[in-house]
Length: 294
Image (tube, rainbow, N blue to C red; front, top):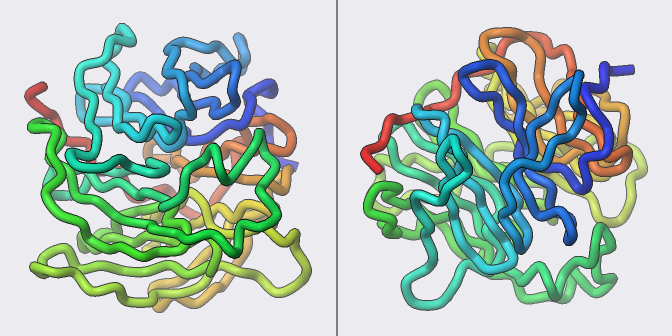
């Protein structure tokens, strides 16, 4: 069994580690809808009231928290005191389900939009049984975080775009929950092509609604992807082959963040309302955390 930092996080997602070593995550559930500090001593401490449905979260070089908020379709940046310093929305329509986000090596922000309204799709943790018949408009957006503008749409027409990560060479990887696929993009191209990298599904039985969620690269060049509904972290090697599965205590893992330069990862998991510490085969590849003039 993995060590549990704390329980009582309601529909936890988006774990991050600040430069002072503190752990943070979002709580997606209605009635919570917040950013919480996670502590062995204090447990789950709701700290920033986001509202709506906060989903993914990342962090910049000044320890500001960037939250993908699904219910109202926004990216919201909070400073250390919990004040909003930037709120980014789509200029012409709306983000349908702002899901996860990461900074790239160029200092720009990349956001996945799952392409369906959360209010239509999910109640609590219960998925609408007709989900396979929905029309998905999953997208990946490239955003200037300082100007608060969308620079380009990297991809569109994805079937529930979800987790994303950058490798050591600056390639962007994005997964598609309902297919299990992970795609790779060369952002140096004017119109980055969708290239299939691999698939996270492990052999065996699993619940009907299951698929890749948050992910991160290890220093070994492998991709570590949480798989909601399978109780583990799928490990894809440099060629995209599924080579291992790191087990988690609960089945509904949602996201992963490596802790500093260690081989420990913090995992959010919905089934047990828990935050786990999982020992991994290697340290994580450091996130890009630009200092931004906001």
